[in-house]
Length: 278
Image 1 (cartoon, rainbow, N blue to C red):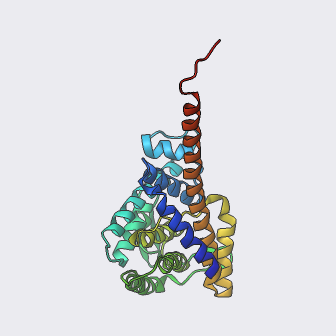
Image 2: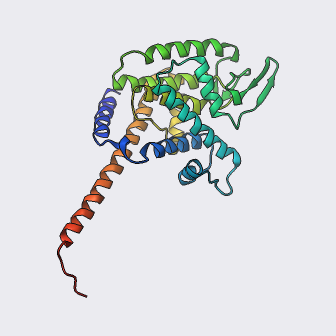
């Protein structure tokens, strides 16, 4: 993992030197990409172009479920909220977490009635029932409030410390894994946990990380294997590979763009002053 981190820091330095985040509309389309990949992992069927049209112009995709559009618009609004909260260095509390969850599920959540009472996923309420995912049985719902309180206290304490870039990055990955492992909500846990990861990254002025939809199987495998072996290094290494993939893709776009611009300039220079005969 040390070698991966060193490579990431080198890529971050190159990324910052290129001033990628200063490009026109870069931030907007970066957020659109995060929304697209995070919701696609959870079943949304819109393509990346359809996501851009929906979030940019409000154009819905023909033949695609309304639910999938709502998932994306809700996630986008939650991401904007997370970025602003992180920019303001808002303390990470249980109430903030519930706000994020409520935004993620605003238009797709519902009221659930159980023997222990009712809860509303559209408002970010904690679950009052037990949940499973494959072979994984998450913590009993009765333990969720106290576990989340401890989680928030520990994360908030770590956030406010003086962290190096690599330490902040690892903290963001751990925050994602630990929250999704508590699974405090009936639905939306994956999306919320990835937004908390983005909160930590933006809090420490790091580029925001995607979990790419094409790597969904490996993502789930990393989560399962980490729990089975009780070895967080497995998940950290997977997320480092995702971060590396994101940085390399963005750097490649800029470098290719510069090559294209240089080629056009050379072409114009070579043709300057020439008379063309037909």
